[in-house]
Length: 62
Image: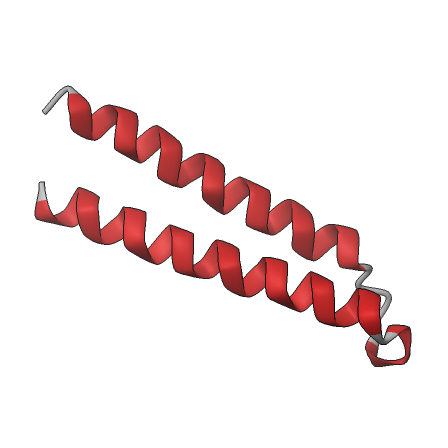
């Protein structure tokens, strides 16, 4: 149970970091290197939020 709560926190922190990176790249497109568009960072953030939600729902059934 503690592991599930820990993973929710970690995934949400990673999601906010990825979304902040996308926002930084949108604000200054000159920082885009190796063809990594802001949409990729936004997608990673959405995936992390989805994992946190799935983990939270699973936690309800423990």
